[in-house]
Image (cartoon, rainbow, N blue to C red; front, side, top):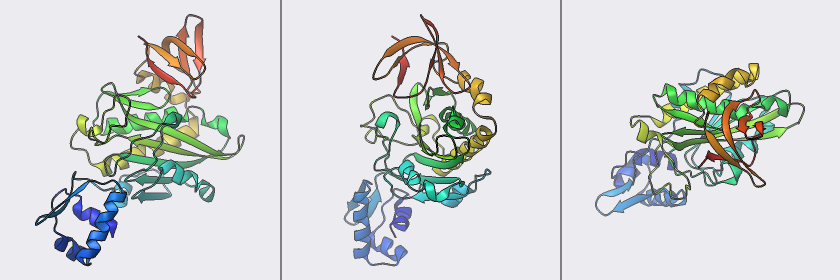
Length: 318
């Protein structure tokens, strides 16, 4: 019933309790109980005597069929959840039951969305895209070299198809636009080191966020609606998922090598001086692209150095 109630309120207009009850086939008291659940989801709404109830912001709820209509690649399972701790955690806990399956999950909200290095991923209800995809790989962990960069390429391709200009990639797995972070990627792996394994590929994409939503974000950010105002959330979700599945096919056939030049051409720091920091060291140099494994090539005073992904931060020098 809560999903149906949200569908009625999604337009952001006032609806009386009587109108909502009639549409849902329940009493006004039952409507009131459902409205209280909006508090649990941190969905801001107003109640005005004589006018009824309205969400503070109109939203476009995710629709499984509208998303599936855009999928041309193989996808075995698709779930759209109202609320979840993390789409990655949701799939990771179910991975062993779906060996060999391609299983995608989208959520309206995450209570404990995660980014790299344990950072929180801000995940307000009905505003952005929170997507995770479970895929099985043979060949063990070594077969995954460069996968996070390949997923970033998929995100860039989807955004380009949607008409977003100036999208850039930041090693190892961030997507930028207008010099600000637009999306991030988190990969988690389970299985045998030298045999079959499963990967959960998580993508968080800012679609429509207010400054209030983003108070916990500690770096420059941007959302898609500020770059192109007429985007449908379901269109973005479907396009993104389809491009990820297409890149997975490409990666499983040929690895990251065919995407190596493509990625470097879109690297926001390509041929620029950067500083790379980790918990144990700091190094500066000029970015010279990535190798076939997706490792960063950095020209330093000591010569060309190869930087592997890990607990690292990359930023412009100076």
